[in-house]
Image (tube, rainbow, N blue to C red; front, side, top):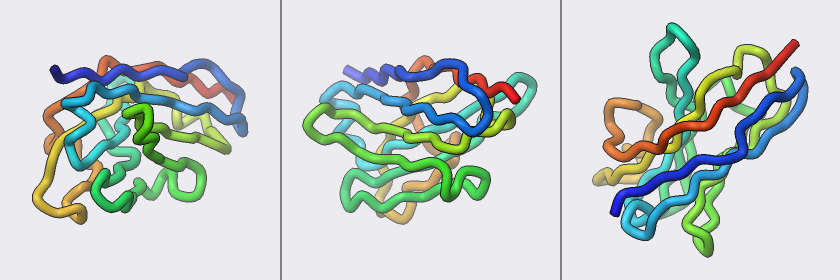
Length: 127
């Protein structure tokens, strides 16, 4: 059964931190690539970060490098996104996604490459 459930969103002031979590079903967690995406009102869905479950290699969008960290908790079938130094432009609905790719280097935050999606969690950053 495919299931991805996000949590941890909320409202925070600029400069603050939030930690998002995505709990995956056993079936979904077997996909070899997990990612976080976001979509602000009126904008296209944007890739934030991905992590390969095979070798834990990561990829970050330039806009979040040095501020966000993606990680896996294999004991809990969970992928986390630690977000620090948040900015108002980080405000968006954040989605967790999963899929499998032939090579870990193909685990990139391209939204149209992912077939499994959660329902999203809202992050609002005020100035």
